[in-house]
Length: 549
Image (cartoon, rainbow, N blue to C red; front, top):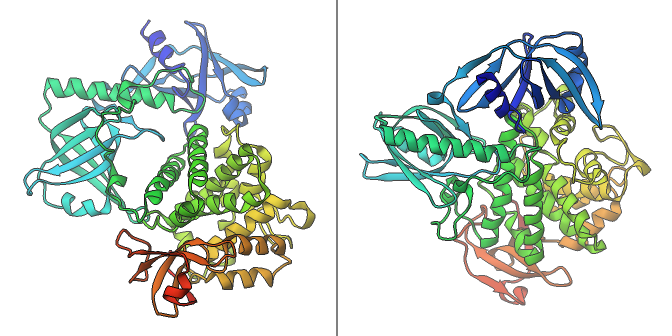
């Protein structure tokens, strides 16, 4: 009876994994469709069809999952038969005679999935009450893991003094763990964060009861965020945002942005950063989260395209990969507005552009820091397109033609010297040609390990002198749409004044700038805004100033 009860919990979408019994067997997603107590299990292995042959040849496997606060594993099973059931691959296996408990309630960790946000405040009560905000990543009765900004390193390095951790849930619920000692930390210099693990001390019965409630609530909410989960499943009350709740607590709440639009756009950047982490941990692209953030970006563009274009230059706290993907999505969307595409096409284009380079995060990080990559290195870099494809299998709403054009073919060239397929000529449609121009313009205007950033004029001249690789029509359209000094450019005027371009007139001339005294990314400390006849007040623009990024 206990085995049956535990198996019932594994039948929820995302509740079970299948692990083939061999030297390198990794847990694979599987759905426990049904079970006949004492006789057989029915497993839906549609997501992992490639191993059907292996299982049918008698290769043993186990099922793993979380049930009733335990991490459990079945005894060794074998597949008896497989058949197609209305497009799903359903197999039957023998029934497990026992379940092994691998992890008990006390040490069970509930992990927050993509789309779940719980803020945390870390305080050093013996160092003048210093505090810093971060994000909760997982929680157990014994401890938690937080993601904190790099600035937390000093607070974490102040000896073995116990810290105070306050958890802040979306509904406004707050709970303080008064004594938590640092057990480990790991700095991620690319993302500029610190992952820190804490162990709770002197936990009484009341704290254990409260933490177990939080752990179960996180698990309940996490089940809703699994691809293929029941859409009717009710959210955990802790994750229902309250209108009376205090302002958002979290690592990004510590960030300062140059404009209100940049702060709103940071939500898209935050999603991409979290999605990259999910991919690193073996996860897939979240169809729901991708849809939501594509809608958000479309909304921001409809509200104020100029403010959004400028905001793409204000995300300097983000990784280079995230900044590039956000910028390509915004600029490709804006460029296509001249042909008035339908809303659904715009959404598919935006979503595809947001993802187009995420496969690079699945390759070794040092590969992208090589100042002189070899031929083999360059070939390895090109694998990022194919690596991403299997991770997008749940994005059924995304139009396949748009996905093919923007994700798979954005690096193809008219002369056939692109990748991954070496397509060229008439094989490449209008969307592929437009996307390639937007992608390469943005990439060349950013510094890279093997070369510095280029000015826009240099990039446009380069593309126009290579009509065999880039469609000259789309290069000219890009120039006409965004101007000689596009929004987001730092320019120097004949008066020797520096200013960030924030608006253009109908002829493409600079019509609004915000003054600055420094050559660096836009910040809150920029000067006043000059609007109207800018040239009469500041003189003519004499050059674009390159800002590394």
